[in-house]
Image (cartoon, rainbow, N blue to C red; front, side, top):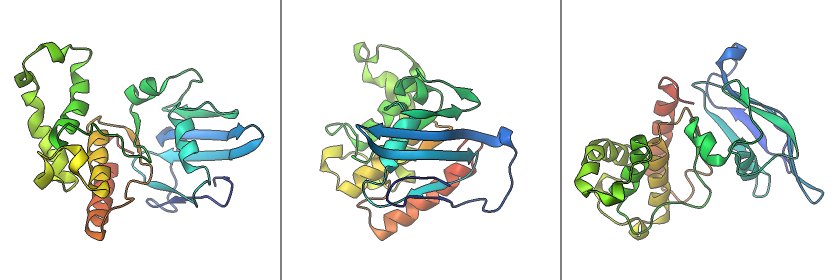
Length: 222
């Protein structure tokens, strides 16, 4: 169980009551703690996440959920405790290093390129596969190879009819859906979603819930 201030619970939403061997855990934490000038934001979290499972951190505002995500993805350093991802422990990894290892997260505040279209936002994420190429010197036609996959992801999150809208034009809930598409474009092995359905309508929530379940069922996804 997680110990977070103000009653934040850890719930397994999949594979309830099903035993797994330790080799199946993609992420483990031990006594993970973060203090700010004496205030304990995250308190002694012991967590095990198995591949192919879905988990939720549930608690009121200020309970430490986002701080916990920041620790797991190296945006913050813990005061004490350790994090083991895919069997390895590293205290010095940068957020970009963690993302390259397959641990990808979304943010509580939507983080998209506001003046690119929905399709272009997802395509930018897919460009990661090209490595350190200088695509800004080339014709944009070189990126058309990503259009089919980008459109598939846009459709998966229910944004097909918005594909050529600029992100700034989207309602808040649609921006959240776009951010999920861009994180999925990075082919994560483990995906952390910070309030992914905030501002969404009932129909969108059902679609995104189904998408998360489908992604978790895929090989190497968590």
